[in-house]
Length: 381
Image 1 (tube, rainbow, N blue to C red):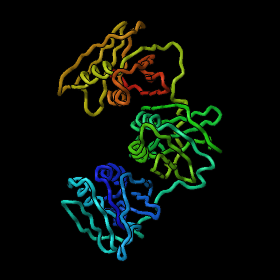
Image 2 (image 1 turned 180 degrees about the vertical axis):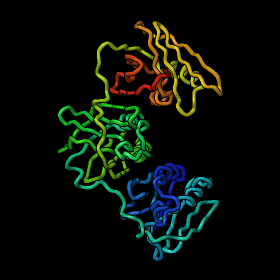
Image 3 (image 1 turned 180 degrees about the horizontal axis):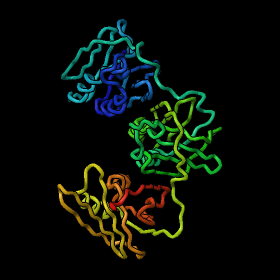
Image 4 (image 1 turned 90 degrees about the vertical axis):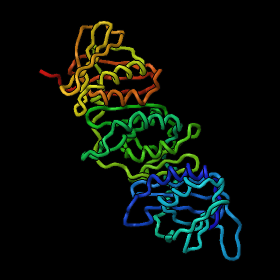
């Protein structure tokens, strides 16, 4: 294998793919990224942790000509720790990679490295978009999917013993051409709905995609391309540009999220702006308890008062003018849960805060299909 790569483009691609390599794994091949140069001249990078796999077509790669002793095509396993450091530390514009079966030579104009080689056959098969996926798949805009992942993945609980909470639910509705994404950890819920193109026989049941895989998918997306998503067996497949990602679905039954999204009467809808609301929460939280993270939201006509008090740190009191004209009531929420929602939006964006009482959940919504539910904390008696 002999190929020349633009170092900056290689660094970007290697950074994405290498996130899946498993540091310290007993199988040394899983600590590596596989570089593969095919007969067509295509150069790809692949990595896997056995649950999620990625295969990325490398831009800026040029196969070098065959010689009697060395072939252009072939593969090499690149140790993530060592090769990643070489790519970051060298200053050469181009890096050449060659594998003679025993060692990998990495060279530029001002540097060269020889690394011991691992047999590429020890690496699992690379992810590819399977023919079966064409029977039914969903087409999404990259920008919308990346934004939707950002708005839902944070609300999941990857460490939960209830495995269904460790991912985001994808639920398709071919009749309305809508795709819903739902993430929850049992104490808050994030929900996004948007239009998508359904191609072929798209299943209507929900599939739970693990949070870690979604974060990798979001990193791989561009703002201009279309993403294809398909469920094949127990795997979710994503293809965008020259990148294909496959991930094993999360087992378990997802909570009945429709029961969590409130539909109620006699509620108070308050128009808010992200930036000012986020600012007063950060101020009030300076002395909040770091374990319970409880912050008191005191709603009075025209004003929202935020307070926190701890014996060790003291007390905070911050006010924000709001368009509220109902009766006064107090509710306590985990300030981190509220700020997670706000950090998923632009500071200038408008949203609606829907509240009823100290014991009912708070509903935060935007006009572009995003809803977020936060359960209140118990007030001191």
